[in-house]
Length: 135
Image (cartoon, rainbow, N blue to C red; front, top):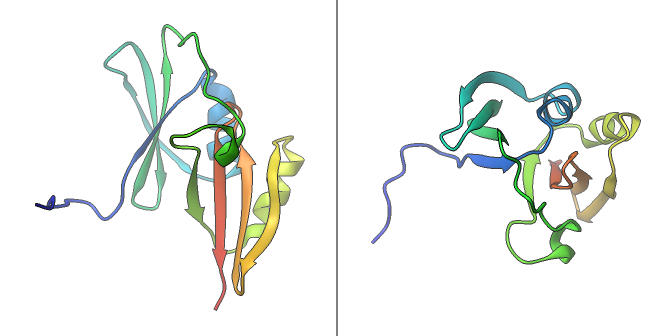
C-alpha cells in the first residue's frame, strides 16, 4: 500500500529554545521567508517559514523541554541529525553564516564532481546542510 501525496515536499518542525535567535538564523541569515506565527497546540508559538514548497515550523513552547537534542550532526546520535536546503551559490551563504558567528560544522566541500555541501549549526545545534549542484 502506498500513500497518496497532496504536496511534493515534506514540512519540518524544529523545537527551538529562543525564537529571536532562530528567526535571525533562518530568516535574516539563510533568507527563508517568515510567513506567519500561529499558536502551538501544546502551548507556545509556531513560526512558519517558507523554503520553496517546504514549510519550516520553528516551535517555541511556553514550557521549554528539559532536554536539548544531542549535538554533533550525523556522528552525534541516531535519529534525524540534519536536513538539506538546495541552493544555487553555496560559498556566499556559508560566508554570511560564518560572519554571523554561526558554527560551520563542515566547510564547503566537493563530495563528488559538481556537487558541494556545507553543514552549518543553527542556534540550537541542529545541522542544516546546504547543497549545491552544478552541471
